[in-house]
Image 1 (cartoon, rainbow, N blue to C red):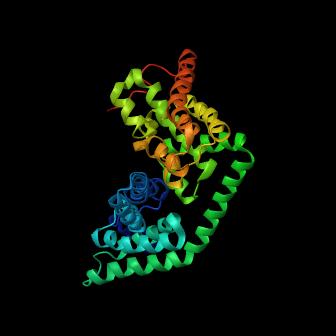
Image 2 (tube, rainbow, N blue to C red; image 1 turned 90 degrees about the vertical axis):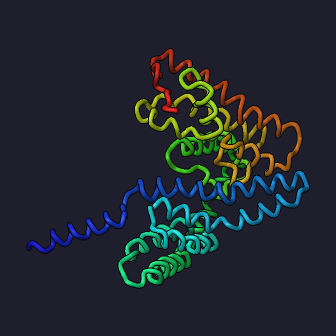
Image 3 (cartoon, rainbow, N blue to C red; image 1 turned 90 degrees about the horizontal axis):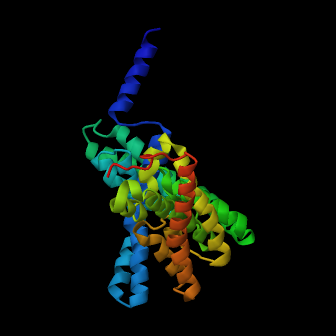
Length: 346
């Protein structure tokens, strides 16, 4: 009767020692967030260099872009394993797993395969005298098998779901413009990755433009609305960095989120119906972070015409700033936002 509790306790201690935590925070926030950095360090930066190379005719940028994009799978594997606190051999082996997962199932395939491989690799890490063989062997074998098992199905599901969203946006640009803009914008501010979501769904075209509108509304909106509290440092950190910096304040007072979200619900349908903005998946969920969103629009629309430039200016910068400021002032007068509610520790 006494051995079972003792066994359970020792198993929990073993998992704790191996830093294995079966939680939503670990797999859907930490891993997904790190995944975005992997994407940015490979596919996203590669896309930017590709656009520069295409428009300037300087071949070296195309060469850099080719290598950066080719490293996407490896970057995903390493970044996800890093978020899971994988030891060195597991971390390095995750590059192979990420390549297999991304090739067979896209970014979601890489996410699932790397999570399974990293956790199994952590279990056996430094538990044998031949760790140099066992740990990478277990990590790579389990990861590749998982990629083969779940990858194709995951890829088909994400493709179908993404196509459904894109088709619905083309058929109902007003209502879907509101919905996609608001939801992706909210995802950008939450501690998850809107960029990863858009890439996983291959969200491009008008749906990609609506997603960009929502992300810009959150980033530029929070930056402008909190200017009196955070000054120029806060403006740049949120406007060119991330509105996720406000997450702590949102937890304390969720009503500060109303203004930028309302702004996104206005700019979304304007992006789809008036300016007909499009984006590529790599830029759709980035907003004004490093100006990747506007660059993505330019890439998707091949730099076409005055309407595109007017759309970038209005949807990505001017309207998010003006609308959020107006909604923010109304919220302050209503007592929903108090002094200090938007203050950041910068």
